[in-house]
Image (cartoon, rainbow, N blue to C red; front, side, top):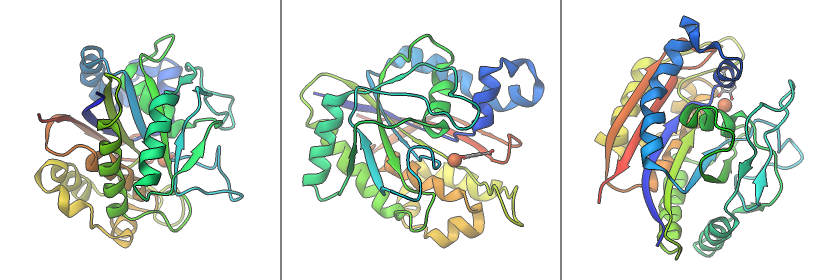
Length: 279
Ligand code: DHB
Ligand code: FE
């Protein structure tokens, strides 16, 4: 059977992807932000997931005001890196896992989560930057990816509790897939950041640290944080952190293996955590 073995959360700051692509690791500013991922790259090389369910948000790349799915699952064979204005990132095409993805879609919909099924979509920095952070610069990504896109761009995004419940349903779906697969689930985005307006540049280290702590210490608190608290305490884009709760809701009991928190990097507090599922 397929097994969910670990969860990872990470910011998906586009400038970190550019820094990797342009070989800027030697510069102190980028090195300080990127070195917290070295541990994870080594760990991933040993963990060798077959599939990553990659929870991310599209930033008006595949979806715009014409269509805004709350939850969408990528069931296609492959997903091309998007052109976000400077040409597509020079990273491998993302290979999907249609068998697992369609199984998850069926389970979730019969479990009363109304997923949008997408076969063809470009994937933007929300998905490709975490792949680069966790896997470096391989000629092909070392695993298949099931993209799971969440609307956190246009009000109303889903609640943290809804995200948590979706994570629990994803775990049930994975556990009922007959193939022997090592599956990870990643949640991307965050941590505190606001990209525009009078509060642009807002960072809340104390709030972010408590959120990281409570992924293991008190995850039940996190699922009930209201939107207004994310907005007030973590800036307009901090709402991306509800996607971490899909990851966390899928995992059950966990042990924290690794954590990285760093400011400054672009406009965002870099947050990253690796959680191992306990047997
Ligand atoms: C930045 C962060 C994001 O999450 C994003 O989607 C775009 C930009 C930033 O910090 O620059
Ligand atoms: Fe973002």
